[in-house]
Image 1 (cartoon, rainbow, N blue to C red):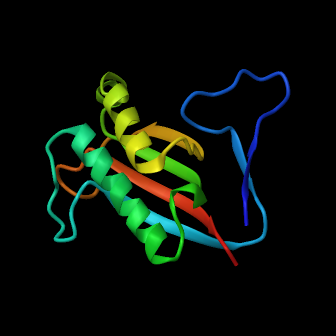
Image 2 (cartoon, rainbow, N blue to C red):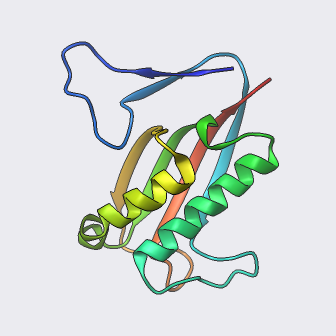
Length: 133
């Protein structure tokens, strides 16, 4: 199984994500939305940066439980309640990303939403991974 980045000819290269990911045969894993809480469902921080890191840890925990790893992530959707806060903390989020994901950037979308189901949640990550068959 492998993931291949798709970059249309003549397009400027994106920074921090891939425009498309093609997956060779494998198992698809759909990871439900993960927020920045621990295994006891307690939010780890009141700050977006801390919640983002924990939400990514949670996504990766599900992927690992299915037998995969960070480079198996093909798609990630990021929901934030405050886009300006995300933009303001992008550098720290980027450092945390590289710490957990290395230089792997799946196809990604970021959406600003009015709110999330869990009170106090500032970010939610939803993912798709392609695992070895």
